[in-house]
Length: 173
Image 1 (cartoon, rainbow, N blue to C red):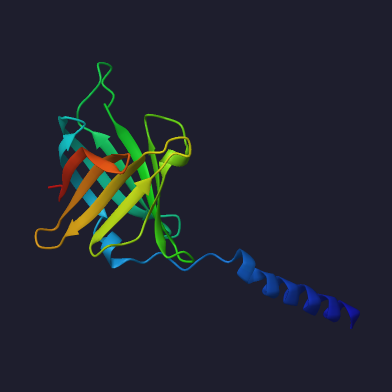
Image 2: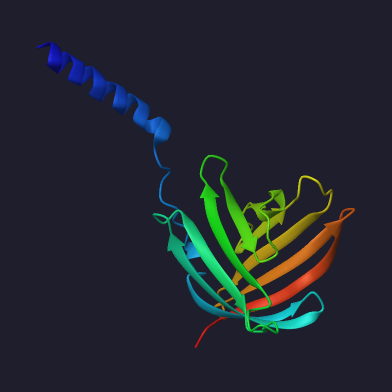
């Protein structure tokens, strides 16, 4: 009888504690779903023309959209001039998008973390390094009419935005 009592207590405690460790609901977002697939990114970035291949897929139990971005331009050693892996998630409690942007510039810092509140069909992430008063804006915007995305990047200094990138993502053929 005592064993049954202990078993009931242990099971009850586990069930009572489960919500504290529970995974948040699966990240389902019809807007972000449009990013899934293979893309070719073209446009201007840091005063030059770029062409990058981008792939995006849901990962980690559909909690994050993972994007891989690789430039077609190569370094002298044959490696891509630019590479990044980006994770877009959702903070259900705060009702904001989260983004972790990791690229070949290295170092995970507060500048690698962005946050956004959806504005129509746009997700305007703001990245800010704790040691820098400026902010960096990266806005993904879905254009349903032609099935493309734009990704605009702007450096903010003293409250003024300076364009860094104006790019378009089109489905890869």
